[in-house]
Length: 56
Image (cartoon, rainbow, N blue to C red; front, side):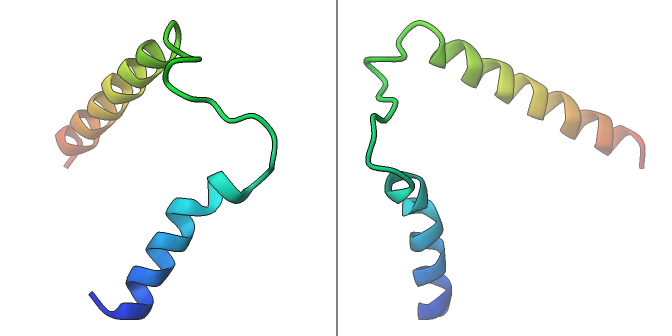
């Protein structure tokens, strides 16, 4: 990758942390619902991928 591309990736990856100065969600604060949301997102993404691959 080129240096400008890496800079853009780093900028966009860090952007949510710089979006506001208020509270941020940390894993220990979201211990109850964050794993469930991540699991559902992964399952939904896998299902969408399998569906898209099957339609070809």
